[in-house]
Image (cartoon, rainbow, N blue to C red; front, top):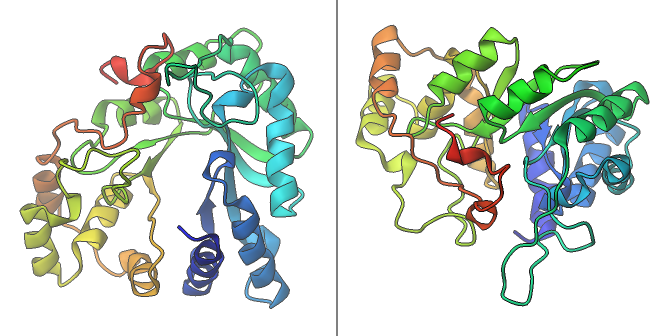
Length: 295
């Protein structure tokens, strides 16, 4: 994505009514997103406290002594004083340094060994310092969540777990577990990803072309994307919608104008096949790789 497009799309989203902006150090667009947010504050569209901004701690910064520096880098790029939510992006630690994906001479990713409980303690300190209003995790499985929840001396539990979640991988078991612990599940790739070649197998099914989604879209006179987003909302999931196109951004926020029936929800539940678009295969050999467990 050309970086200028990121600024433009973020401005359009804020104008359309979006307030929750999900970003990360590893996306390498925080300067552009920050520019859009600040320009919408400057022109009076929103105040800073209207925006709910999320950033994420990247895997090369999981050592306790590096955690705060990653958040500070994000804040500097954004020109903001705090983020509303700060997440551990992925539970596998990578070799510290400027490379987001450090590789050895054979092109294999270089992992690092870090105690995630020690990482979490510094996340808590970032919250106490006012740099992050809330803290959570992303791509954690049940076992990893329990490790944090059961940590001796836990000060703040993760408020959320952001994971891939859509009708082909509805995360029912993880969602039930999170609800039982009062942890919010946030869904990424809810529309089936942008299918970027680096991350997604090009032979994978196109989520929004699913005939069941299509039939429900016809029934409700909405787009398949809106059906997919509404499904998550009605399950109590916080859903993220990614687009750079003005017409799609404006359409995505119309998710509040209709409701799916109980029968519709059952039909959509039936599409689940535990299929992941984003597998982070690069890191699959690490003991902290989260997707080897059932959930």
